[in-house]
Image (cartoon, rainbow, N blue to C red):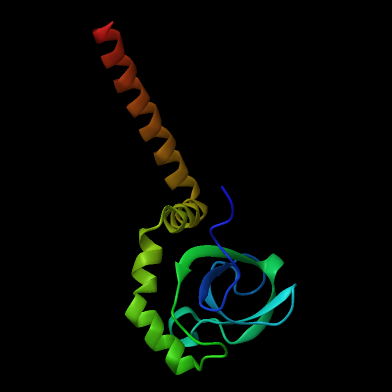
Length: 133
């Protein structure tokens, strides 16, 4: 099958560790076999230009057409043209992260309401299945 996501200039990545965890960024340059230079762009994602190890990023399927060491202005324009934000929001990965975040922010009473709703749903399904059988 092989790999489909490569570390390359223009690859959009998700930062999975550190202060910017959960934010998107773009690979601007490859420093060595362990690190790369990334940039948000800061106006859109809040990630400033920095060197980050590959262990702290996850490669996405999204890419942007940019040259090596592109300026922030060029990167911002490329993100707008490629509509990266909207494409990311449509992915199942982004939806899963959003649902995890939503679940983590639930209060005790909200979790109780979810439990009651699940019980009601399973009772309705069991009742219908009993009628069909």
